[in-house]
Length: 283
Image 1 (cartoon, rainbow, N blue to C red):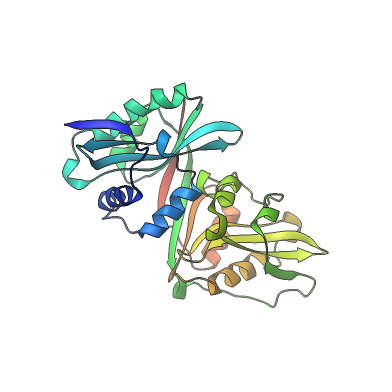
Image 2 (cartoon, helix red, strand yellow):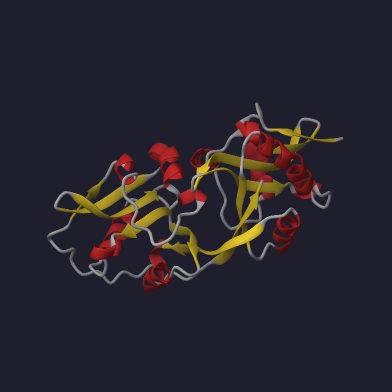
Protein backbone atom coordinates (compact mmCIF):
# COMPACT_ATOMS: atom_id res chain seq x y z
CA UNK A 1 0.00 0.00 0.00
CA UNK A 2 1.26 3.47 -0.94
CA UNK A 3 1.56 6.00 1.88
CA UNK A 4 2.19 9.74 1.50
CA UNK A 5 4.26 11.29 4.28
CA UNK A 6 6.92 13.89 5.04
CA UNK A 7 10.56 13.08 4.30
CA UNK A 8 11.65 13.80 7.87
CA UNK A 9 14.30 11.24 8.93
CA UNK A 10 14.48 9.73 5.44
CA UNK A 11 18.17 8.81 4.87
CA UNK A 12 19.99 10.86 2.27
CA UNK A 13 20.96 7.66 0.46
CA UNK A 14 17.25 6.84 0.02
CA UNK A 15 16.62 10.34 -1.36
CA UNK A 16 19.51 9.93 -3.78
CA UNK A 17 18.39 6.50 -4.97
CA UNK A 18 14.86 7.72 -5.68
CA UNK A 19 16.15 10.90 -7.37
CA UNK A 20 18.60 8.98 -9.56
CA UNK A 21 15.97 6.45 -10.62
CA UNK A 22 13.37 9.13 -11.37
CA UNK A 23 15.76 11.20 -13.51
CA UNK A 24 17.94 8.49 -15.03
CA UNK A 25 16.93 9.51 -18.56
CA UNK A 26 17.79 13.20 -18.07
CA UNK A 27 20.82 14.77 -19.72
CA UNK A 28 22.23 16.08 -16.44
CA UNK A 29 23.08 13.40 -13.87
CA UNK A 30 24.13 14.14 -10.29
CA UNK A 31 26.40 12.29 -7.91
CA UNK A 32 25.47 11.79 -4.25
CA UNK A 33 27.66 14.74 -3.29
CA UNK A 34 26.26 16.95 -6.05
CA UNK A 35 22.68 16.20 -4.99
CA UNK A 36 23.54 17.09 -1.38
CA UNK A 37 25.05 20.40 -2.53
CA UNK A 38 22.06 21.13 -4.76
CA UNK A 39 19.60 20.52 -1.93
CA UNK A 40 21.62 22.67 0.46
CA UNK A 41 21.78 25.53 -2.02
CA UNK A 42 18.06 25.36 -2.70
CA UNK A 43 17.09 25.29 0.98
CA UNK A 44 15.77 21.74 1.14
CA UNK A 45 13.63 21.16 4.23
CA UNK A 46 12.70 17.47 4.73
CA UNK A 47 9.92 18.36 7.19
CA UNK A 48 8.21 20.37 4.40
CA UNK A 49 8.97 17.82 1.67
CA UNK A 50 6.91 14.74 0.89
CA UNK A 51 7.13 11.34 -0.68
CA UNK A 52 5.12 8.32 -1.65
CA UNK A 53 6.37 5.19 0.09
CA UNK A 54 5.71 1.59 -0.87
CA UNK A 55 6.30 0.17 2.60
CA UNK A 56 9.70 1.77 3.36
CA UNK A 57 10.74 2.34 -0.26
CA UNK A 58 10.57 5.94 -1.52
CA UNK A 59 9.00 5.69 -4.99
CA UNK A 60 7.90 9.28 -5.68
CA UNK A 61 8.81 12.59 -4.09
CA UNK A 62 8.74 16.36 -4.01
CA UNK A 63 11.82 17.97 -2.45
CA UNK A 64 10.88 21.44 -1.21
CA UNK A 65 13.12 24.34 -0.34
CA UNK A 66 11.72 26.82 2.19
CA UNK A 67 12.63 30.49 2.57
CA UNK A 68 11.84 34.09 1.82
CA UNK A 69 11.83 34.87 -1.90
CA UNK A 70 11.12 38.38 -3.13
CA UNK A 71 9.89 39.16 0.38
CA UNK A 72 7.33 36.32 0.49
CA UNK A 73 7.58 33.11 2.53
CA UNK A 74 7.86 30.54 -0.24
CA UNK A 75 8.10 26.81 -0.84
CA UNK A 76 10.25 25.95 -3.86
CA UNK A 77 9.84 22.61 -5.61
CA UNK A 78 13.48 21.70 -6.08
CA UNK A 79 12.67 18.31 -7.57
CA UNK A 80 9.56 16.20 -8.23
CA UNK A 81 9.85 12.72 -9.64
CA UNK A 82 8.52 9.18 -9.73
CA UNK A 83 10.60 6.08 -10.38
CA UNK A 84 9.70 4.38 -13.64
CA UNK A 85 7.85 1.30 -12.40
CA UNK A 86 5.46 3.43 -10.30
CA UNK A 87 4.48 5.91 -13.00
CA UNK A 88 0.91 6.15 -14.21
CA UNK A 89 -0.57 5.99 -10.70
CA UNK A 90 -0.94 9.74 -10.22
CA UNK A 91 1.55 9.79 -7.33
CA UNK A 92 2.85 13.29 -8.08
CA UNK A 93 -0.70 14.67 -7.96
CA UNK A 94 -1.36 12.80 -4.71
CA UNK A 95 1.81 14.25 -3.14
CA UNK A 96 0.86 17.81 -4.12
CA UNK A 97 -2.73 17.34 -2.98
CA UNK A 98 -1.39 16.17 0.39
CA UNK A 99 1.35 18.77 0.75
CA UNK A 100 -0.30 22.03 -0.38
CA UNK A 101 -2.73 22.31 2.60
CA UNK A 102 0.12 21.37 4.95
CA UNK A 103 2.40 24.07 3.56
CA UNK A 104 -0.38 26.66 3.75
CA UNK A 105 -1.07 25.80 7.39
CA UNK A 106 2.61 26.34 8.27
CA UNK A 107 2.55 29.91 6.95
CA UNK A 108 3.86 29.39 3.43
CA UNK A 109 2.29 31.99 1.15
CA UNK A 110 3.50 30.86 -2.25
CA UNK A 111 4.59 27.71 -4.06
CA UNK A 112 7.21 28.16 -6.76
CA UNK A 113 8.69 25.78 -9.33
CA UNK A 114 10.34 25.46 -12.72
CA UNK A 115 9.47 22.81 -15.27
CA UNK A 116 10.88 21.87 -18.67
CA UNK A 117 8.51 23.14 -21.33
CA UNK A 118 8.67 19.91 -23.33
CA UNK A 119 7.52 17.94 -20.25
CA UNK A 120 3.89 18.53 -21.15
CA UNK A 121 2.54 15.99 -18.66
CA UNK A 122 4.15 17.86 -15.77
CA UNK A 123 3.13 21.27 -17.13
CA UNK A 124 -0.49 20.15 -17.45
CA UNK A 125 -0.44 18.69 -13.93
CA UNK A 126 0.79 21.97 -12.45
CA UNK A 127 -1.80 23.97 -14.38
CA UNK A 128 -4.57 21.69 -13.06
CA UNK A 129 -3.22 22.18 -9.53
CA UNK A 130 -3.63 25.94 -9.92
CA UNK A 131 -0.09 27.00 -10.80
CA UNK A 132 0.29 29.90 -13.24
CA UNK A 133 3.14 30.56 -15.66
CA UNK A 134 5.05 33.68 -14.60
CA UNK A 135 8.22 33.59 -16.71
CA UNK A 136 9.90 31.62 -19.49
CA UNK A 137 13.56 30.70 -19.11
CA UNK A 138 16.33 29.51 -21.39
CA UNK A 139 18.92 27.11 -20.04
CA UNK A 140 22.34 26.52 -21.58
CA UNK A 141 24.71 23.55 -21.50
CA UNK A 142 27.89 23.81 -23.56
CA UNK A 143 31.14 21.88 -23.77
CA UNK A 144 34.10 23.94 -22.61
CA UNK A 145 35.95 23.44 -25.88
CA UNK A 146 32.94 24.76 -27.79
CA UNK A 147 33.13 28.24 -26.26
CA UNK A 148 34.58 31.12 -28.26
CA UNK A 149 36.21 34.12 -26.55
CA UNK A 150 37.29 37.26 -28.40
CA UNK A 151 39.14 38.95 -25.56
CA UNK A 152 41.05 42.19 -25.59
CA UNK A 153 43.38 42.82 -22.62
CA UNK A 154 41.60 43.89 -19.46
CA UNK A 155 41.89 47.66 -18.97
CA UNK A 156 44.60 48.26 -16.36
CA UNK A 157 42.27 50.48 -14.29
CA UNK A 158 40.35 47.32 -13.31
CA UNK A 159 41.64 44.83 -10.78
CA UNK A 160 40.31 41.25 -10.87
CA UNK A 161 40.51 38.87 -7.90
CA UNK A 162 38.59 36.18 -5.99
CA UNK A 163 36.09 37.68 -3.57
CA UNK A 164 34.35 36.56 -0.39
CA UNK A 165 30.74 35.61 -1.12
CA UNK A 166 29.44 37.74 1.75
CA UNK A 167 30.61 40.91 -0.02
CA UNK A 168 28.36 40.12 -2.98
CA UNK A 169 25.27 40.21 -0.79
CA UNK A 170 25.68 43.99 -0.85
CA UNK A 171 25.65 44.38 -4.64
CA UNK A 172 23.23 43.33 -7.39
CA UNK A 173 23.90 44.38 -10.98
CA UNK A 174 21.57 41.90 -12.68
CA UNK A 175 18.99 43.14 -15.19
CA UNK A 176 16.35 40.67 -13.97
CA UNK A 177 15.24 39.04 -10.70
CA UNK A 178 17.23 35.85 -10.21
CA UNK A 179 15.39 32.55 -10.03
CA UNK A 180 15.24 30.78 -6.67
CA UNK A 181 18.37 28.67 -7.17
CA UNK A 182 20.44 31.67 -8.29
CA UNK A 183 19.18 34.31 -5.85
CA UNK A 184 21.46 35.71 -3.17
CA UNK A 185 19.88 33.62 -0.40
CA UNK A 186 20.61 30.42 -2.33
CA UNK A 187 24.14 31.54 -3.15
CA UNK A 188 24.85 32.20 0.53
CA UNK A 189 23.29 28.86 1.54
CA UNK A 190 25.67 27.06 -0.82
CA UNK A 191 28.67 28.07 1.30
CA UNK A 192 32.03 26.82 0.05
CA UNK A 193 30.46 24.90 -2.84
CA UNK A 194 30.42 28.17 -4.78
CA UNK A 195 33.30 30.49 -5.63
CA UNK A 196 33.29 34.10 -6.76
CA UNK A 197 35.58 36.43 -8.68
CA UNK A 198 35.06 40.17 -9.13
CA UNK A 199 36.55 43.23 -10.78
CA UNK A 200 37.23 46.38 -8.80
CA UNK A 201 37.72 50.03 -9.65
CA UNK A 202 38.89 52.35 -6.87
CA UNK A 203 38.15 49.63 -4.34
CA UNK A 204 34.52 49.14 -5.42
CA UNK A 205 33.12 45.97 -7.00
CA UNK A 206 31.72 46.69 -10.45
CA UNK A 207 31.31 43.17 -11.88
CA UNK A 208 31.25 39.63 -10.52
CA UNK A 209 30.89 35.98 -11.42
CA UNK A 210 29.69 33.26 -9.04
CA UNK A 211 30.32 29.68 -10.09
CA UNK A 212 30.52 26.05 -8.97
CA UNK A 213 33.80 24.60 -10.17
CA UNK A 214 32.75 20.96 -9.79
CA UNK A 215 29.65 21.12 -11.99
CA UNK A 216 30.43 24.07 -14.27
CA UNK A 217 27.36 25.96 -13.09
CA UNK A 218 27.43 29.75 -13.48
CA UNK A 219 25.15 30.94 -10.68
CA UNK A 220 25.49 34.67 -11.33
CA UNK A 221 27.35 36.93 -13.77
CA UNK A 222 26.64 40.65 -13.83
CA UNK A 223 28.31 43.97 -14.64
CA UNK A 224 27.31 47.40 -13.36
CA UNK A 225 25.71 49.39 -16.20
CA UNK A 226 28.37 52.11 -16.15
CA UNK A 227 31.10 49.50 -16.71
CA UNK A 228 29.61 47.48 -19.55
CA UNK A 229 31.20 47.14 -23.00
CA UNK A 230 34.69 46.84 -21.50
CA UNK A 231 34.84 43.06 -21.61
CA UNK A 232 34.55 42.59 -17.85
CA UNK A 233 31.95 39.83 -18.10
CA UNK A 234 34.05 37.88 -20.62
CA UNK A 235 37.20 38.16 -18.52
CA UNK A 236 35.39 37.05 -15.37
CA UNK A 237 33.78 34.10 -17.13
CA UNK A 238 37.12 33.09 -18.64
CA UNK A 239 38.68 33.19 -15.17
CA UNK A 240 35.88 31.00 -13.78
CA UNK A 241 36.15 28.47 -16.61
CA UNK A 242 39.89 28.07 -16.03
CA UNK A 243 39.04 27.07 -12.43
CA UNK A 244 36.45 24.49 -13.49
CA UNK A 245 36.77 20.75 -12.94
CA UNK A 246 33.79 20.12 -15.22
CA UNK A 247 34.05 19.59 -18.97
CA UNK A 248 30.92 21.63 -19.57
CA UNK A 249 29.48 24.96 -18.50
CA UNK A 250 25.84 25.46 -17.45
CA UNK A 251 23.86 28.68 -17.32
CA UNK A 252 20.36 28.08 -15.97
CA UNK A 253 17.17 30.16 -15.87
CA UNK A 254 17.86 33.14 -18.11
CA UNK A 255 14.59 34.96 -18.89
CA UNK A 256 13.86 34.85 -22.59
CA UNK A 257 13.37 38.63 -22.64
CA UNK A 258 16.83 39.28 -21.10
CA UNK A 259 18.25 40.26 -24.48
CA UNK A 260 21.57 41.55 -23.15
CA UNK A 261 22.41 38.25 -21.43
CA UNK A 262 21.11 36.17 -24.33
CA UNK A 263 23.24 38.17 -26.80
CA UNK A 264 26.29 37.88 -24.54
CA UNK A 265 25.98 34.10 -24.34
CA UNK A 266 25.41 33.92 -28.09
CA UNK A 267 28.67 35.82 -28.63
CA UNK A 268 30.44 33.00 -26.77
CA UNK A 269 28.88 30.39 -29.08
CA UNK A 270 26.28 29.36 -26.51
CA UNK A 271 22.79 28.64 -27.80
CA UNK A 272 19.81 27.60 -25.63
CA UNK A 273 19.69 23.89 -24.85
CA UNK A 274 16.03 24.14 -23.87
CA UNK A 275 13.30 26.16 -22.19
CA UNK A 276 11.58 26.12 -18.81
CA UNK A 277 8.47 27.68 -17.36
CA UNK A 278 8.59 29.37 -13.99
CA UNK A 279 5.25 28.67 -12.32
CA UNK A 280 3.69 30.02 -9.11
CA UNK A 281 0.69 29.13 -6.96
CA UNK A 282 -0.50 31.47 -4.23
CA UNK A 283 -1.49 29.57 -1.10
